[in-house]
Image (cartoon, rainbow, N blue to C red; front, side, top):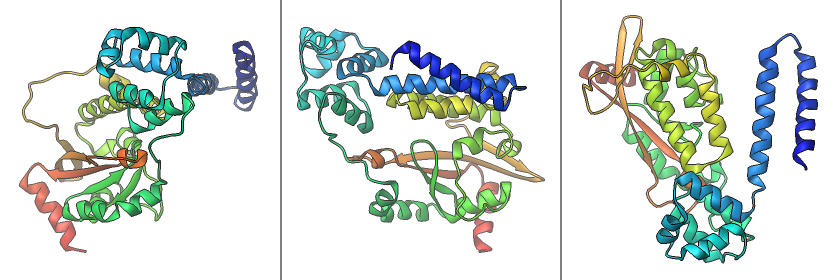
Length: 307
């Protein structure tokens, strides 16, 4: 598809969508942005191996000499690979992917672009959880009565222990059975956890930075879409832009919740599988919540004793 044709199709799509909601200019702008992001993502997915290699090198901030040194090849050979004047072997693609420190998902994308089969399996999420279920369940159970959750790379909730259920029920009420939950949206959106999180602006700044780090690390359209979705929530950009940096008072940033006359102070840790050999397994995360004070610990334990 030519670029001219792509833009024509984009404008036709926007016009059709705008006719449905013609009175709302904001809808028109949102649709235009989404369609152009889709086209940009399509172009990226169709990139050849030389283009992908060059993109990742520049994305990582390496010169050709630096990447060549990391991969143990000559700068001349790397230049020929980026220009398409030399073909990379399967082992060379994997070597360069390691040197670029890209996730396993992007290992596979580079291999496919070079004409090779993926090296790393990508097990369905349900099957992956089944294979690692005992380990995940053990970690969640060991965290009781304190909250713990298992999430995927885009913060979609996969599993939660009883402590997490008690915390959510206290803050927002019981969730419908089988409800899909995205913890990133729950934290950042204006009407879920934000009303109860006293230091929301400070917490969301740190969280958005972590999502930005994820987006820079994996370079995927999907993670970038998550980042832009979170930034689009009301109040997020001002919270980042208008940050007031005060004197650091502790080694971690706590989350201070308040509902009615009750207060909770928690901090979190995130665990991943140490030696993943599967795309889905590499992207699995376990987030555990710990009390910052005795009052919070006592409250969490009291909730557990009532069940």
